[in-house]
Length: 287
Ligand code: PMV
Image (cartoon, rainbow, N blue to C red; front, side, top):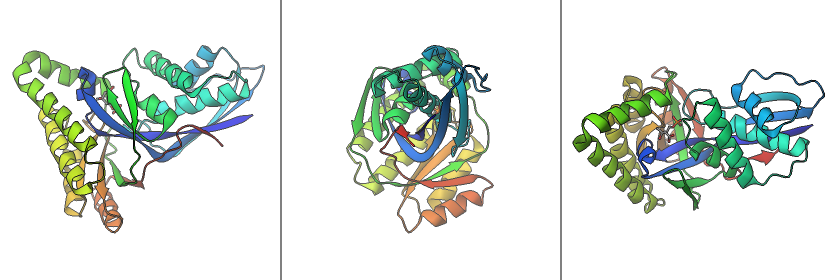
């Protein structure tokens, strides 16, 4: 029997722009998914298409048990975390000796086949290695110096479809490139400024607010996201923005330790779920 866990993530900056080869910053967060795999002759058919694909790809049979601290379909990378933890547990239980880099690549393949070819490698990479990651396009990823931010995530409880939102931006880009391109370029510039202001939370917060406004301009906003972002800022956050695809899902705020309870309370006061968390630097680990 082998038990492994893997963390969820937030997109700090640059979502949507990364689809067009521009930079983005993502960060692993503390809540994780814990998966136990046991070798068995009788293969228990998993309910999750991600887990089923992990067993198929690794060509083994076994039973699996999953516990999750992450809400699903909320833009916090729960499917990537399930996939990475399952692959690691299979790798350990069946002594397949795959490296973490191989696990990250396999996890991306699993997400691609479970999501009909629409998955960036960001979630699976961040979940495997933990920490803060600068992504550029689909190929380049590099770890940034980890920051001990106080994060409050607000889950709108409004379900969203990443591929629908990506499609919406693609349509704007096709119909009005003169509007869409400068917005995507500005998001890229904001991401680069953020990368150079990792230790300046006030400036980081200002840049978050700008990025949020540009996501709204791209048409991937939602009234609940706007409500939570404004509530978090009024409660004293340095900055607040949508994280991930938008159209529902989650936002996050960065705050001082002294204001985080107030920010979480303001989010809960809008009938949303608040998660107070910080960076995870472990990535996938054996439990
Ligand atoms: O909502 P999430 O966490 O799946 O993030 C989507 C981020 C996008 O940039 C919109 C798409 C992508 O694959 O990077």
